[in-house]
Length: 470
Image (cartoon, rainbow, N blue to C red; front, side):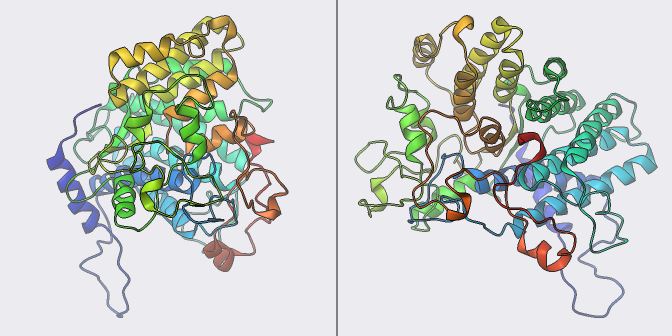
């Protein structure tokens, strides 16, 4: 994991405050606390930082769906896949895209090609996450301020734009630039080579989503993989600092203070403790906490605490671990993820490459968590893990990717593509009856959009699928 400059982070946090919006209730010409024309550097600071938070926000919205987390309360809305209001999540995506649109506009005007390329990559990522959650969304009319009720663009067409943005971003990052990116970049601190690898990694991610469509090309995925991350040192992350805790750390701290959250699903515990699979995963104690009795016991999704009302009777996120330390990174995209994408894309045509990538993905995640070398080697040597190239299946790849992408929203994309086919993943207790005994396939459009732009909001149910999941 790369070492981050905390002084840069602290300066950046000040910039975040400087450029945050404020409502004005006075009829005045200028608001001294809200600059009318933010500099490109400040926009980059805000956009890179908030993009990482958007990844965490999306992960928070979807982690119960893929049974990483479970509600301690019976029939918790996320657990039972109710229609919930994600207005704040929606706002945060569009707030970042608005700033990124300004980065792109200003960069084009000034010949700042590196800022332009990075902006296009950030736009592709935030737009892609929004489409993956909601389907059709406003985009083409969203940033010109000519209408407050923008039309909705087709999700498949938007995917073409996402890939185009990434391609344009790569081209611009490879070009000469009038201005250099530096400490205003929370993700890579101005490392342009890293941005190019990041763009290729994201391209592989979005292309693998289209695997079930007629336009899918495994070769295109693998070409993007070849230009992507080559080790854990390349990972796209934002690390936190004394003034701002990692959001998952805050969940763990809040839970200790009886603001209950971060309870671990029984499905996740049993997948790693030797119950579902005949091997104990050494990553488990590095990812989640034990009960007060030192055991790993999960919570059944939809059932709540059941017969164990005491807080310490179930496993939860606990402060101080890799995902939950106050200054832990939020993982935007990782080398481990890319290796599992490679394994899936190569499985049918090149099993040897797929198998090597699958094992590398497991190893990369274990190295990230600093698993003991002997424990790592023992796990990798287990016959249910090291089954050989000729016996590797998609289920094997998806299971290990599910573990390695703990709390990441990309897992919900995988789950829907994989038809929730993880071993022993069952529907939650007290499932939303509108789902007709099926898993959720999309988020509902937020109430804020329905009230503000209702004539344009598509009529959908939670079972209507995103275009790549037909």
